[in-house]
Amino acid sequence: MEAILCIDFGSTYTKLTAIDLQGEQILGTSKGLTTVEDGIMVGFEKALASLTALIGPVEFTEKLACSSAAGGLKMVAVGLVPELTAEAAKRAALGAGARVLGVYSYELTKSDLAEIKAVEPDLLLLAGGTDGGNRDCILHNARMIAEHVPGVPVVVAGNKNARDDIEAVFDQQGIYYKLVPNVMPRLNELQVEPAREAIRGIFMEKIVEAKGLAQVEELVGGILMPTPAAVLAAAQVLSDGTDRSVGIGPLIVVDIGGATTDIHSIGSGEPTKPSVVWKGLQEPHAKRTVEGDLGMRVSAVSLWETAGTRRIAKHLPDFQGSVEARCRTLQDEVSFVADTPESVAFDEALAKTAVEIAMERHCGVVESVYTPMGLFLSQTGKDLSECKTVIGTGGVLVHSANASELVGAGFYTEDNPTCLKPLAPHVLIDRSYMLSAMGLLAERDPELALRLMKKYLIQSAEVRHGA
Amino acid sequence: MKATVVIGVIGADCHAVGNRILDHVFREAGFDVVNIGVLSSQEDFIAAAIETGAKAMLVSSLYGHGEIDCRGLREKCQEAGLSDIVLYVGGNLVVGKHDFPEVEARFLEMGFDRVFSPETPLDVAVRNLHEDLGLVV
Image (cartoon, rainbow over all chains, first blue to last red):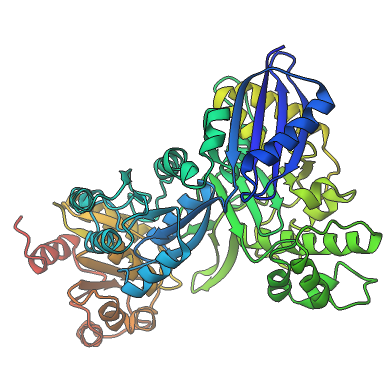
């Protein structure tokens, strides 16, 4: 038997997935509690011991890993106009699996740089100006970065006409940087892939080591990408297919975590109805949004602050206590696992609220414009109304008996008719925590990753929801 | 290098055909045209001009509400650091029948550098733009 091991070094758990390549099956999965203080290998050893107990000793031919340990990949994005290159830079960073700690626009000031320094980013993404457009701003920002945060690697993805000068500045100051094509070569046109690749390259070269994960590198021969990037990669293979096999088409992944709720969508998001004009920035084919204020534990209080008591309580008809107090308790006890019907119900209400809001922010909006020529419809963002598949992942979903109901909170409703959420998709649940592992496997063998996902995820198809 | 110009139809106006013609004509005349399309706000024009380093904004309006939509554009450009940008406006700028010189005076007062009536041949506008940007043809 030829087997490989996919490892996801998380901030709390290290998760293992053993895959039999010839038999095309998942042999088993396990997890072990990880803390960076104890050394990341401790969690790995624990997880490996329970995996061995489950499936017996296996000689792995290869070990592939992704990681969100030690805070994951922390980035700051810099652009020119907030809605244009600054937004493009943010989207590129999110798609590369980063936690975006700040987005800056226009010329950086000393106080901006003090803020950037204070959040200790692993990497900066510097954009600004379309090709042939404004070059003064990005050049100013390059000089400021070189002077004030010289130790941070930089990916430069701005106006190509400013590149030579930026190179001169960075070379002179000894900055570690990579130059890639512009994230917005022409107005409103997005080109995020080269920047994403460069971010991943620097993540593997520099950041893994800086986070004390070098010891792991020896074992696994390299951490390939941040975990969210692996999830997005898996979603993209499943949706788009490979060179030889077709995928399942446009899809959405909902990932509810303790600190954030991530939504990934694969698809063009073009208007599905006639006579709708698309406005604003082009959308990335593989798009990821991260909601730092929507989470089950670390961000439970901010979820309550964002949603308000009534919106959460709507999912809890019988709840007698204080929603706020309960959220505060959950935020204090981040490792709490819901174990009574009442605590499970509360967690599920939080999850539904998080999905509802995160999907509202991810999906596009259609607005009516009354003009002298009559009613017009303009669309901003992705139209995901016709998307046929939504995949749920993350602890609260995977362990829930009502998983498809929780995911269903993110579907289109008549309360909010302008938001282009999916109307009637199938729900698939990532019961075997396979998505990040499949993103890793897709690096080596996308065909196999696609077949395994079709086999295991489609099996989990639950209900057909819809309007 | 070609001079960049931003073109678009301002306000709740979705006349797309004239906009396409302007795009074609100014591109043929050697400009790098950034077309932000119909239903564009003043902010869309300004954001586009900043990112692209544009030298001129050519604002179209055909539905007669141009005056409301264009008011304050020059001041906003100044706020956005685009003090030197050349501002043109053209089309059916006001509702009803008015003498063009009167309409022109009103838009010049609002800070536009040139105002074009619907009858203006496009080559005149192209020639004006070359002159105003100091370009030799």
